[in-house]
Length: 276
Image (cartoon, rainbow, N blue to C red; front, side, top):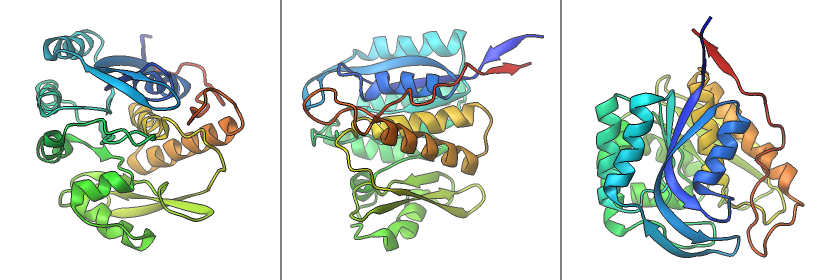
């Protein structure tokens, strides 16, 4: 019997501090029992305090990374993170179409936890027009959802309408994250566009500054669950459980002087295989 890894390709920026970006993706994908491959879009000078500089990877090198992975190893899902320019967005969109990848989780990263803008202004429209229509799932937080829809979110009562607007006429599933709201209980909303259903994902707020990389980790966990064959709603529940436990288990761990990372290794699993 031949065995194969469950494979996840992450296309994102590198975080030298190890808490977000490609580094967080690899940790989360591995902890979820999948095999991580990468295509790095940019190198950041970054730590728990903030982002000091961003160096874009040349387009031909980014394209080469994607081709090298997909032409040889292949993938069961793609997670997309920081795409800093319109040119990068268009390249990634073209590659997804070229290889016919449908299991795509897009985390529309625009601003870091520390408030540093990570994307050029002209890239936003290209994400909306070229990349979102190719995604199976998008995982915006409230500021990102407001940018993408042009609508102000005042509270949880707005989530269903916003999620439907982001779904592109019920063709894209949306995990709308509530972390920017106040309150002791935060409720993320998952809209399953393939079944036209909503699932509420509540969690208690954790009093910690170790929240660096939460969005990257959640979307990577989601892509990993899809790669393992879970349906959309089950994958959303798995991803939510993973990030919740990663935050709780890492809440009191001291690393750096700013926003520390979540604990990706709270319950690492053995590598899972797909029998064929």
